[in-house]
Amino acid sequence: MPTTLRVRLEVEEVPGGVIDSRLVSAAFDEGGRMNRYEVATAVTDQAMPISTTTGVATIQAVYLLSDQTISLRQVAADTALTVNANRPFLLMGTSITALLVSNSSGSTASILLVVYGT
Image (cartoon, rainbow, N blue to C red; front, side):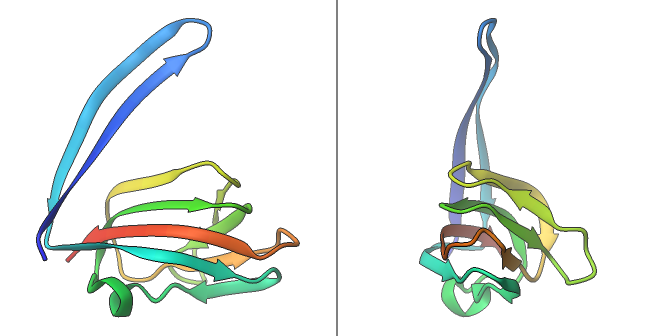
Protein backbone atom coordinates (compact mmCIF):
# COMPACT_ATOMS: atom_id res chain seq x y z
CA MET A 1 0.00 0.00 0.00
CA PRO A 2 1.46 3.42 -0.94
CA THR A 3 2.57 5.36 2.09
CA THR A 4 4.48 8.51 3.01
CA LEU A 5 7.19 8.65 5.63
CA ARG A 6 7.63 11.96 7.45
CA VAL A 7 10.53 12.52 9.82
CA ARG A 8 11.04 15.70 11.83
CA LEU A 9 14.75 16.29 12.32
CA GLU A 10 16.29 18.74 14.72
CA VAL A 11 20.04 18.87 15.08
CA GLU A 12 21.10 20.75 18.20
CA GLU A 13 24.43 21.24 19.92
CA VAL A 14 24.33 21.65 23.69
CA PRO A 15 25.51 24.23 24.45
CA GLY A 16 25.21 26.11 21.19
CA GLY A 17 21.69 25.74 19.91
CA VAL A 18 19.83 24.40 16.90
CA ILE A 19 21.95 23.83 13.79
CA ASP A 20 19.19 22.50 11.53
CA SER A 21 15.47 21.80 11.85
CA ARG A 22 13.31 20.39 9.06
CA LEU A 23 10.57 17.98 8.06
CA VAL A 24 11.78 15.31 5.65
CA SER A 25 9.09 13.55 3.62
CA ALA A 26 9.28 10.73 1.06
CA ALA A 27 6.66 8.57 -0.68
CA PHE A 28 7.04 4.80 -1.04
CA ASP A 29 5.10 1.97 -2.71
CA GLU A 30 5.08 -0.22 0.39
CA GLY A 31 5.86 0.15 4.04
CA GLY A 32 5.01 -1.15 7.39
CA ARG A 33 5.92 -1.67 10.95
CA MET A 34 7.15 -5.00 12.10
CA ASN A 35 6.32 -5.94 15.66
CA ARG A 36 9.21 -6.22 18.08
CA TYR A 37 11.62 -8.71 16.66
CA GLU A 38 13.96 -10.60 19.00
CA VAL A 39 17.50 -11.66 18.19
CA ALA A 40 19.20 -13.90 20.74
CA THR A 41 22.70 -13.14 21.97
CA ALA A 42 25.57 -14.80 20.07
CA VAL A 43 23.55 -14.78 16.81
CA THR A 44 25.45 -13.76 13.68
CA ASP A 45 23.87 -12.48 10.44
CA GLN A 46 20.27 -13.42 11.18
CA ALA A 47 18.09 -12.34 8.23
CA MET A 48 15.17 -10.10 9.15
CA PRO A 49 11.96 -11.40 7.46
CA ILE A 50 11.16 -8.10 5.78
CA SER A 51 9.38 -9.01 2.54
CA THR A 52 7.17 -11.65 4.17
CA THR A 53 6.17 -9.30 7.00
CA THR A 54 5.78 -5.94 5.22
CA GLY A 55 5.58 -6.64 1.47
CA VAL A 56 8.76 -4.59 0.89
CA ALA A 57 11.19 -6.32 -1.49
CA THR A 58 13.68 -3.45 -1.86
CA ILE A 59 14.25 -1.30 1.22
CA GLN A 60 14.57 2.42 0.47
CA ALA A 61 14.23 3.65 4.07
CA VAL A 62 14.65 1.90 7.41
CA TYR A 63 14.11 2.95 11.02
CA LEU A 64 15.43 0.69 13.76
CA LEU A 65 15.53 0.87 17.54
CA SER A 66 17.09 -1.89 19.64
CA ASP A 67 17.37 -2.25 23.40
CA GLN A 68 20.81 -3.87 22.96
CA THR A 69 23.81 -2.87 20.86
CA ILE A 70 23.65 -4.82 17.58
CA SER A 71 25.30 -4.74 14.17
CA LEU A 72 23.70 -4.62 10.73
CA ARG A 73 24.81 -5.50 7.25
CA GLN A 74 23.18 -6.09 3.88
CA VAL A 75 25.18 -9.19 2.97
CA ALA A 76 27.64 -11.18 5.03
CA ALA A 77 30.61 -9.78 3.08
CA ASP A 78 29.74 -6.15 3.99
CA THR A 79 31.35 -4.26 6.84
CA ALA A 80 28.90 -4.21 9.74
CA LEU A 81 27.34 -0.99 11.02
CA THR A 82 27.03 -0.76 14.79
CA VAL A 83 23.68 0.37 16.18
CA ASN A 84 23.99 1.36 19.83
CA ALA A 85 21.36 0.36 22.38
CA ASN A 86 18.41 2.74 22.72
CA ARG A 87 19.73 5.03 19.96
CA PRO A 88 17.46 5.37 16.91
CA PHE A 89 18.96 4.37 13.55
CA LEU A 90 17.50 5.92 10.38
CA LEU A 91 18.69 5.26 6.85
CA MET A 92 16.99 6.87 3.84
CA GLY A 93 17.89 7.01 0.16
CA THR A 94 19.12 3.45 0.03
CA SER A 95 18.28 0.40 -2.07
CA ILE A 96 18.90 -2.86 -0.23
CA THR A 97 17.21 -6.25 -0.46
CA ALA A 98 18.27 -7.87 2.79
CA LEU A 99 19.05 -6.86 6.35
CA LEU A 100 21.23 -9.11 8.52
CA VAL A 101 21.45 -8.61 12.29
CA SER A 102 24.17 -9.80 14.66
CA ASN A 103 23.95 -9.62 18.45
CA SER A 104 26.95 -10.10 20.73
CA SER A 105 25.59 -7.98 23.59
CA GLY A 106 25.16 -10.80 26.09
CA SER A 107 21.36 -10.35 26.16
CA THR A 108 18.50 -10.95 23.74
CA ALA A 109 17.91 -7.83 21.63
CA SER A 110 14.36 -6.55 21.22
CA ILE A 111 14.22 -4.63 17.95
CA LEU A 112 11.57 -2.33 16.51
CA LEU A 113 11.97 -2.24 12.73
CA VAL A 114 10.08 -0.08 10.24
CA VAL A 115 10.86 -0.38 6.52
CA TYR A 116 9.65 1.42 3.41
CA GLY A 117 10.35 0.76 -0.24
CA THR A 118 9.08 -1.14 -3.24
